Image (cartoon, rainbow, N blue to C red; front, side, top):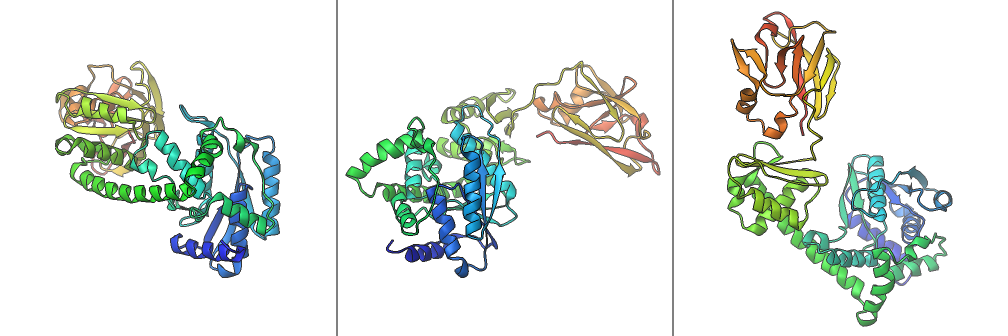
Length: 443
């Protein structure tokens, strides 16, 4: 990078090459060196990128005593560049087994995603050294191909896009540019705290590696690109396997075709499937449990593998994946439901809509009771008394769902099993208005 102008034009060309079509560019601006370079360079290029509207966004975590001053600094610098800066305050929730740094990052991206309109692009300032550190961190955590691919240059973020245009530049190059253009930026003292893994790599390990291999950052970035290409091929194969193995719903995998895949393809398909459902990805040990406990279990077994944010169950010859279920409702619990007000349930919601010639024939304002299974319940349906247990089995509802089925009573008479049937004496007749009962949604 010879001059600031050459850096700016290289950045512009790279950005135009990789950025999805958009009219709005948001710059994630922390006030640090890297994002300050990105903000100033794009401001200098404004006449060349008139098709984009530039905005800055600063996330106020409230974790540092200087957080308020940092936000003011970002607003002042943005104003001096004639760029609107939005400051968003977030609250950090510490998730189980997650570091404060990871939780802050999650909160940051969630806040940005909520701000984006469809196809907006947010630019973040991660550079080659950040990418190299990420590769090493993932390697030391035992990550696979997807983890070692590290940070992609372009990815989806909510309704918009996340683009990292500085991955080809090192921290030294950005610092040189900042000095050449007399930039003002903030220094976060926590970045020097080597108790954090990334800081330890940055300050203790990477300098040693550079003494031996001067281009180590670019080399590790190349590793990330190779792994990203390999992961793309793996995902294509997993998508093909999913087409052959998925069941009646997206949350289902059929065991018969799954069992014919090699163990490695089974594990990759399971990861692909769970990611497609936006569920948390299991560890290697948990994947092995799914393979060992479920693929070889007896047909009448009901094995379960559970981890934070997800559980996988088997019913007959199908695997089901779902978020962690809430506690099973107390069978002695009784909820009052006034028609037609929606009623929240432990796992879903009851609601109604008016239909003609069917549904539940009761007036608005009727007070119903909602209970959960105790055993032995019956309903008069299609001219006979039917055992609820057998009706639920005939409907092929998995056992864990049956425990959450709301049974609807009127004066101690079971009159509705949602999605199953209505007591013969309470069905609206032809020409009569009734309530269609909707149960939404289990999982």
